[in-house]
Every structure is written in structure tokens, then in C-alpha cells.
Amino acid sequence: MAALRVPSAAFLSAFLPVARASLLPDLAPITRRIPLLQHLRTSLLPAVLIPIPSLIGELWDGLLRAVPKKKTSHMKKRHRQMAGKALKDVTALNKCSACGRAKRAHVLCPYCVQSIKRWFSTGFKSKQELEAEKDQQYEGYNEERRLRGKDPVDWREEETQDQKTKAKAG
Image (cartoon, rainbow, N blue to C red; front, side):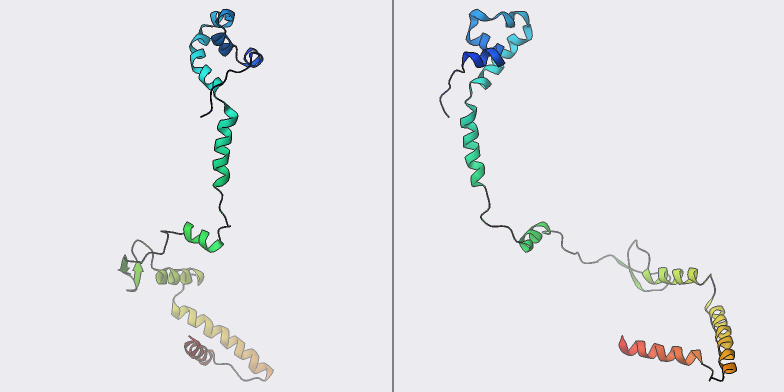
């Protein structure tokens, strides 16, 4: 640490009357008028006498040396940030009480939720009611085709063909 030096009288008179009064005790009218300054003068004086530019210079040299040589790559940065955040194995599996398939504990069965959504979207109709409606729609469609002179369409054969093509693709 550098040697302590006394600040100039102009600095002391302009900014720190307490320090001035402690260095020059014959000119101490301010500390007599304000009793709190008598207690503060002992704590302020050492801070005033520290050579601040040399202290900042030592810190500044250390800060300049603490710079990485190369930019951290995206991969290394992501590896560092994701450390300890890997996917964990699912261990809490239960059997669904409604359909019997495996599901996570404390989570709704996705297959049952899907069937409930389908039930809501069809207006709470059973499969038989839906098939009856589909039959009526295709009967009307086939009537129009017959009037135009075209062959009727059997929708059940088309659905079985669609299911076969989906099974081959999947």
C-alpha cells in the first residue's frame, strides 16, 4: 500500500470541514457548533487520507486481466446452463381404472380424455346413434347420385379400405 499523504488545505476547507478541524485543531469552530460532527471526525479522517487513485489502479489491473481469451461457443454455453437438468425416467406409472392402459400417477389418462372430448364434440350421442345419422346422410347422398345417373356409394366399404391403408402406413 502506498504511503499516506495529507490532502491540501483547499480540498479540506472546501469539502471536508470535519477533517480540516481534526488536522488543524486551532480552527475548529464547526465541530464545536455541531456535536454530531465530533463523533464523525474520527471515522471520516482515515477514509480521506487513503490514496484513492492508487487503490483504483490496483483493482483496475486485476479487472483487466480477468478477461476470457476466446468467446464461449454456443454449445459450451448451453452445456453449462443445462447441467443437471436432464430428463428423468418416469417411475410413477399406474393402471387407468376406466380403460386399463398405463398412465402417469396423479394425471388424467390421455385415452380417456380423448374419448370424453370426442363424446362432447358429437353432442353426447352413442356410437349407434352416430352410425344411424351417417346412414341417413349417405342414403340422401346416394339418392342424389341415383337421380344424376351415377352409382351409389357404400360408405362402410370406404371406411374399411381407409382403415386398411392407415394400418399399412402406420
